[in-house]
Image (cartoon, rainbow, N blue to C red; front, top):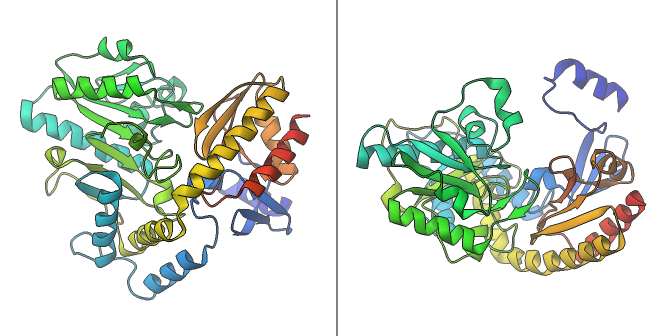
Length: 391
């Protein structure tokens, strides 16, 4: 393993501070390194492996598609993409969808569509976007421009113009930034990288009302918190609202590189030539989306998220009450976090040494993003290891 890591350090661009382990295979919610050591995974590849690893039905469906057609481009129709689009708009409450290769690309498309909508109705100059502090929307230039952490933006010079940042769950701070140039407001329904912060009902309802009143496009980023992670297909379904445009990725493909941005009909402003993607929505990745939706229904995955998510919440509450290092616990379903008095990098590293895969959110929050098929027994095993590490 040391030799393999050495080769990786020599050849790979050092854009990640990787943990010193080389994973080789996986099954269910267990990972195995190249030495055969077993790990319990409570990270699921940054909330991607919703069905866990090597789900037999999922794997079977992808093998079947691999033998038929992997790519044809968006100049032609293909059945998996059309079926996936039908399933996605039904689950999301949207009307139209564009499939991308990643969450960051979905954000780029959403921003373009909001600006195009405003251009068609109001002409040039109405392009400003309000985002929120401590948000995270991706690593491409447009996505970084609306990411509310200066450290992600500063090294890369001038960002997209007209971006301002309000405070999460502070409606007055949003109102203070609105002008006649504002075309969109973008935020995560549940902040992930920013530390697992849940949007308050009054906050989202207030933004929805502002957008309705002033014809501003409401964009909700569901890349991490969507696709069942909170117990509903999309986190905004816990609230009595619909966004105008929403973004998704991660769990919708269960490991295949696919994202999406979707909208209500009146905001479908992009026309032929405005946007595109060579690989986006190809038959292979949309076959994965179809498999994921079908397995969710067949195995009642959302019910498991609710039941095990509640169990995880209660167990983390107990842990927080017993351990003075923990200052807060928050989250919904299988997207939760504990905030500690100290930096968590060493704790996450020690957990890995003890066979538990966790990840941080910022410097002092541990995120829990397990596969959505996780069991209560898996939660108990995780808590047992975490207690040992914290001690």
